[in-house]
Image 1 (cartoon, helix red, strand yellow):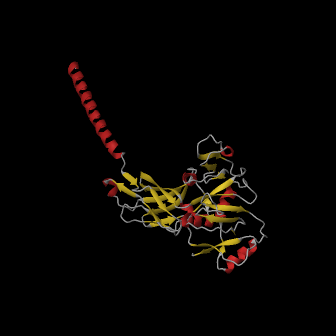
Image 2: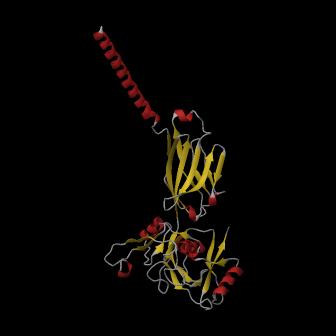
Image 3: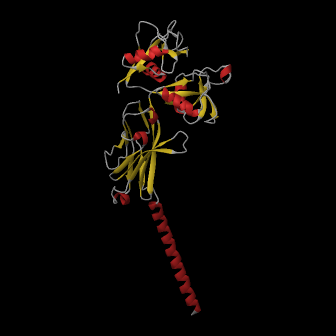
Length: 353
């Protein structure tokens, strides 16, 4: 009787163990299925190229499995953010859930979701600004499911170094940002400086970049610029104290809606006379960024030195020739002369906006 009871217990335990194994195996299969990618977000193109004033679409689509699809679209939350250069925070661009949507900051009135299909989360940005350059994250959320993809926006433009009339190394980071804005530009990113270096930009003075680092591009190694036995490249001073450290700055600007031109005037002008001459012509005295954009993007070429808004005197040469930048195409810098000197003409800018 005891042996029989023992066999029954063994059979019972074995059966339960077998059933448990089957259950565990079954559960394992279900577990893998349930925790797989039930919501997938992707971009068919991860790099978008444009220019200031243009309109662009940042592609983003999402795909759901049947279990999620049966719940409809009313609980789906689509969020676009811009990733800052230091990667420590994100800037909200827009959010949409159902029929409710909201945009933020300077994106208000300029962005909307394309929604060409039910699973289209693409972002349309109109009237592109210089600040729109960078990386954007598309995030789709439904319940406990979410996924993201990254799209980068690149702008056609030009990087230029900038310093004050006091000489080099007078900007802290925040003053550098403002200096670029005052010249119709923004502080350049490392990617923008790197591309400018690849295109031949060589500058020995270190300048702030948008991520808070201080760097400078060298195409022709020489002793005062890291040593003549070093390789060409973008020299990096690292990250500096944004309040106390002082350097020059690299600015970035792009195309503009307007006309940049040298004002034909019967006499040379003082700075104040130059400002008034442009106003009388229905324009404003041009900014440094506008000269660089006209030179680089429009091929503007003029061998006449002229006043600009910051009190500097420069002239753009796209076709090198004798007495006018004989060896290279460049925006030639005369300096910051006494504003009372009647030695120069003036460059003006008339906006079409």
